[in-house]
Image (tube, rainbow, N blue to C red; front, side, top):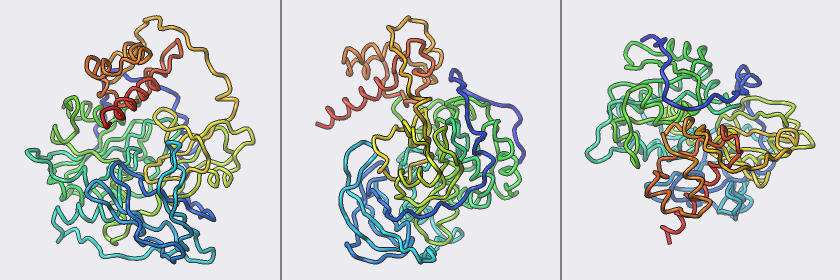
Length: 444
């Protein structure tokens, strides 16, 4: 239907260096299997999956090894054919140990993925498509890991008119979505067909930033006349890929505070998530691998890889010749990703990238100075909050005041405020701590 040449965007935001040149031109490669895969049973928002295998059992690649525990849960599938070594606690990104499964891949196996019962697009009902997405274990691959079937399920008194396919990928270093759009166009279009039918949306918009015009061209060429799909190119700015920012920029709709995109008749999914729907459902398969970018100054080799879920970070870094002075590694990007406390943590469904730094980049810790009330954080905040005030209240431990009087819940922790602060105040870390405290106290 043609690419809209006007580069829409949102108000505020920042323009950090994108560092994508090292990987954006590199095709997706298959990553080797680690000698031992570590599979957490909670790789998504919601309840952890429940094991249905036993220690010592042989499993085939793609076979379900843990079932969903209710609606807000998804199953886990074997990332490789091999032997279940242990069902025990595994290290997680939070630093705590969580339930998981240790799987030893067979060295001589062909690692062929087993076929399941296909979800036939033409005959399946919306309810059956949504169930098939849950059965496949699909969650948001952009980083949030929200169960996709739950996002697509009908909401009372809400109808969906627009499907928003997020291919913006504004996080520095990451080129995962870029390569998926270039190499998996047919899967994306098939995924769109499934999701349009599941939601009843009358149109789909594929959002791409202007630094990925080759991907926008490929997406536009893949759209057939029977698909109500258009490609929108947006300005290069961070955090352009945030769902609320996209909806505002493309549709002029504002999601009310505390509500989701469905409140304004929109469903948004990451482009890689859409590709997995189109890749897996026609074969009745479950997700057992994903595409990630592995990059950063501490790596001699970098690239985009299709990697087995459960691959330990240590194995991935060693395979790509990590520097001896590795200082810090992030799962996700440097802006919204999580710094690792241990390299034994595994790649999960929500891992979009692995970024490694040396002492040269992280060794100098800037001194934190008092706020000078310059307003830079206010000008950067895409949600029009006052991060300076939030930071002050956080230092005073007035967490309820942050939530009740300063819209703490509207912050999605993009980190723009901390990035621009001349006093080096870790504003986003203060905000995360406040949210964590409130979550715990309210749960108690």
